[in-house]
Length: 203
Image (cartoon, rainbow, N blue to C red; front, side, top):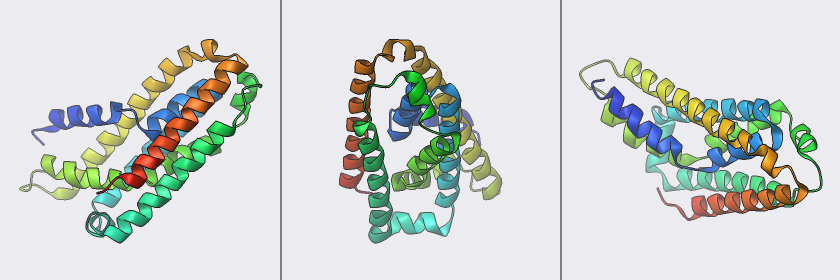
């Protein structure tokens, strides 16, 4: 674990890149409020934790080696991103922020974040590729892998909290129906783009 700090740097650089989970956190923070965005962040972090654990199991190896298994999970993930994009695109901008916040329950926000993370097969491939670089083969595998998994998940939580806080600062500027409608269209389009990118992506 001599390269632990290097791992933190690599993990932060990866997590900070805007992706579906980051966009979901930003959208939740602006439209539903910080508390509900926090529920979504917990779902994202738990999903990442499970995907990281899967990457150490035989299922992770199957995803890495089987084109069929990877493709099935990939299309499930893409379908879910398209679904989120459709929901955002169809949302009107007439209602005020307060009503938008009430539209999603804590459980719903948590599950959205969880499924965005858990249905991304490329995350498992990422962990299979990156984690071994920071494992000392002379020491026990499980304790090292556990530390890396929980470190990555904690960093996901912290980075997403930062995104949520900064996004919340912009809420007052986006409270008009017109601004809300534009943001919903943009967010929906971004999720459509993520879904299309996942469909087109290879291993």
